Amino acid sequence: MIRALGVRRIKGFTLVEIMVVIAVIIVIASIGVPGIMRQRVNANEAAAVAALKTLSAASVTYRATHSSYPASLVDLYDPEGAQYIDSTLASGTRQGYNFTLSGDEDGFNATAIPAKPNITGTRYFMIDFYGVIRSSASGPADENSPAI
Image (cartoon, rainbow, N blue to C red; front, top):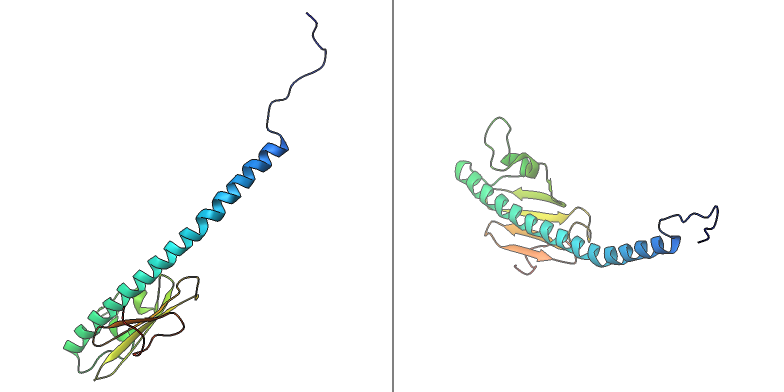
């Protein structure tokens, strides 16, 4: 039996094999990432609607103890007094949406606008003192927008 002198086989992957694995990973990622991003947008929009419901309930409760509805989000959160909402919502930003609230003795309305349109959310929302939530995909929602 004759053995070749000085020849050793090196075990490992070739460049072509590594490139094929990378290509497969890229294809899988390109299929999965858009779906994950859409689910995140859906979650942000659901959280925005829930926050508007919270603002509505807090505004009605505020009205029961004061002579008017709250003029802004700041009225609903007093660190040393009544706290109708949490500090995160009182700051005006939560889960990719910016919130505003305006009110007087006759009523209020609150809006939720995506912090980064088409990235953190695709729809704009608003709620009034009747408790009707409205949405718009083309810009800030108002009383003429369809109810959800």
